[in-house]
Image (cartoon, rainbow, N blue to C red; front, side):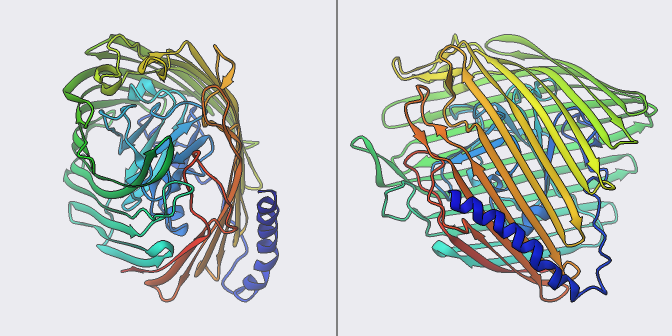
Amino acid sequence: MRKSLVILAGLALMAAQAVPVWAAETAAEEKGKAKAVHQGEMVVTATMTEEDINKVPSTTFVVTDQEIKEKAQWSLMDALRDVPGVYIRSNGPFGGVSSLTMRGTQAGQTMLMLDGVRLGDPISTSGSMDMANLLTGGISQIEVVQGPQSTLYGSDAMAGVVNIITKRGQGAPSGWASAGYGSYGTWQGTAGTQGKIDRFNFMLSGGGISTDGVSKVKDGSEDDPYSAYQLNGRFGFDVNDNTEVFFIGYYNKADTDYDGYVNGKYADTADNVKTESYTGIVGLTNSPLAWWNHKLTFSYGSVDHDYSDDSTYKSYLTTAQWRHNLLYKDINTVTLGVNWQQEQGEYSTTWDSLGQQSVDTLSFYLQDQLKVLEGLYLLGGVRNDHHDDFGGHTTWRVGASYSLAATGTTFKGTYGTGFKAPSLYQLYSPYGDKDLDPEKSKGWDLGVVQLLWNKRIELGLTYFNIQTDDLITFDMNTWTYQNLDEVKSQGLEFYAKAHLLSWLAVDFSWTYTDAQDQSTDKDLAYNPRDKGTLGVRLPLFGDRLNIRVWGLYVGDRYTDAANTGEVDSYITVNAAATYKLTKWLSVYGNVVNLFDEDYVEIADYSTLGLSGFIGLRAEF
């Protein structure tokens, strides 16, 4: 691993030294001025209103469609791996069960959303959706908001939210298509179209991947094939200048071979699961008055797992939301709304089953944003959720940011409470307990963002502290779910972005996390204390050639609550390049695990070694 770190640093230095030679060849085309890192990037997830990313009190990171395309990342999980404070692990590559944790919290405590609407799998153990099969086609950007967000989004948002924002058709109709081949017999392709015709806007994207795969278990010899296909779309119609009706949806189908547990150890088996999921959202946005706008949405989604041993798991999630924004000049924005959701699920296996269960939650929320002084931004909100089983639960949040334009400095901080209701599985399965309490959290963070060198450098530092009470865990002694007393997570996040030259951009991040069970003083399983990222972007020859190199460091992790097992730290380095052959045709490729690091994310499960992919992309 140390060798990989040295090579990574050397690679960045060599790139910086070599590029001026290439850049000199196109000096007539290059003006040599780097763009500002911070150019007023706007986000919507942190407050449910459009705001400058550096002014919202909650720490927010954005993964853009450009970054996804330049890195040739087909998987949503891969697109999120480098986000500061986010840790992802999988039970093997190519469709292995995956989990996302944020700031040392647990899987299932971060809400996944599609355009502000929750995506979930209510019959899963945590109630959250496994993101392993979700593809990146049709995405405009992904917004990651950290810290308790239950005030706006309710249960499951106690650690933060990940919001996938779908592309909206605009301009003259256009299209794109790509196809390529890579290691492990992997085929991957995408195609789509978007645009606006009169009052009708549209975006339709489809993609898929098929691979011979690798063994899911570390010491396996049998490859586990995998395939996944996805369709995304957004269609809107402007009824008038103030009103749009729209439909947003996705459909995903995956076929995954995996390895099981035989005679006390993981081994090659012929296990398989077929997964089908979809969500459809219909809605209306309307601005009847200059000081009032509102949005009404209805959604329905389903997740269906069919296993080779005839086990089946089926779940359904239905939601309705009505949100209003009341504005007073540029000083005050009041957001209020009502949200209803119904979770349904059932399963059947060879050893037990659960008939369809259902639970409803009705929620009301209120938020006020104030901008009373130059540079000062204040926020406060409250929410009440009424759950069928445990009744009402109130959460609240306050936040502030203060920007000094003269120095390019922004101070920000939040304090909020969160909660997570027990899942249907945790309540009603043979291993469940109907008397479980919801998980509750309180968290705060303080941070500073500094812009330097005409906004070409951006630095950020944040301290976070999250305390979770009644954490739901599985007791191996009683084989039932139970509430723990208290879990605490605290740490520091640092990031740096620099557009040093027109042909050189660098980003770096480091997150330190101390997450412990307060009753035992033991670290939480699979929570690395250290995680770091380093990336270099080289747009050359007037952006005709684009090269990216990025590395990920993950520290040691304990594999159990008693801290008796441990997996080693690792560094992976990846690279990608795109070259424009013509105005509309490009060749692209990537290399995964450039230095063939031997590592695991989860004990006994494999990861990808040195591998590559090459393809063609057309835009017309």
